[in-house]
Length: 275
Image (tube, rainbow, N blue to C red; front, side):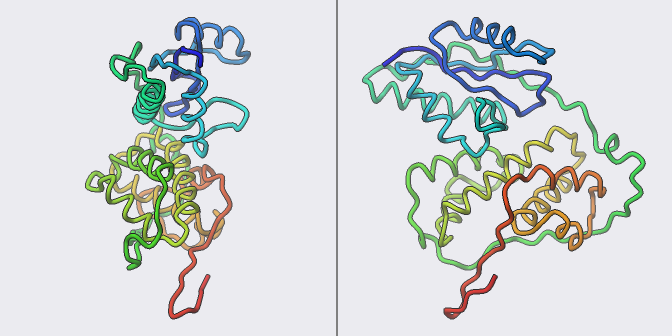
């Protein structure tokens, strides 16, 4: 057991939602300076947005990285695409879990909380300049089926990952509670696979969320495009979807952010399976 800190670092050069989450036995500010000095090609120093002390920093880091594995920007690096407020919640929760496991205090673990939020620099108008694509109305229907809740049981790990999704989409779906998310995933015959799909959607959505969307409708359309992208290729999405609020250039950028392979929805009815 090695006591230390779990830190979340931000950097203006990386955009809003790219965060480095790691551990250190030294002071977090010292570690941030070390990383900046050793990182070639990074023009801006790292800011310590959040840090917690914990009884076993290696175990806490392992748990956090496992919980956020789908949001990892690079499998060999400790960078994640996730809002800082979501990362903050997960870091604190895991540090409390680890301290409780070792019989340590779960109070007053936060040592740094800068509350850093970088304002986005781009606007839709900037991206759409010189794009002559015509925009059309599109109806975004609820992609929900009538399967009964509780069809599949969810592990504690699955519920923790669902909680991350709930936090990421809190502003997009303000009326949906964590319980609603859990119930909906329990309807699925393969909730683990569905959770991974939604994690990839969330990761892609956060990549484009640095753009200043002027309305909730544009965010919903971006999310709809990603839902479609999770089931088919980007070219197929653009072929089938009539854009309402987003120009074609923005739509392409959004679709490019989805990194996983498409998985068509599988529907079972009267013992016959359709794809």
